[in-house]
Picture 1 (cartoon, rainbow, N blue to C red):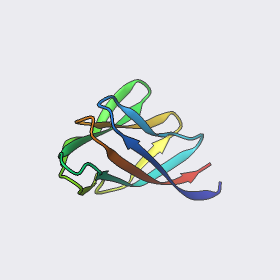
Picture 2: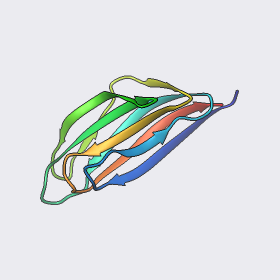
Picture 3: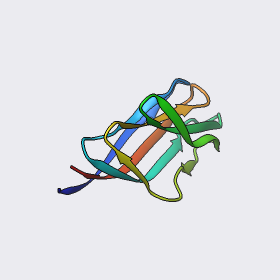
Picture 4: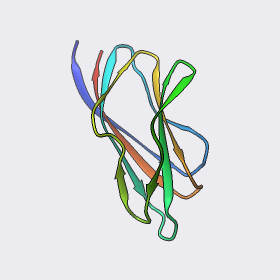
Length: 106
């Protein structure tokens, strides 16, 4: 199985959960989740959930992200398997940029 480092990025500007990473066929290790508040006037918050099937588990819940600041959502890697999904939710409709760094084994 080859190992490939990848990153996935999105802008989250809604308060609905947004898929940031959908598991692959195989395994993956999420090494980092970087969140940046791009708004120039409003602080925001971020929640990250790991979904195993239809059941969600919070990795981070309503973590504050100050105006034009960044937040590191992981303090240790998270292994994922086929069917796992990571979703991100913004606290406000203001912009958050999210980048997920992943090591995939297929």
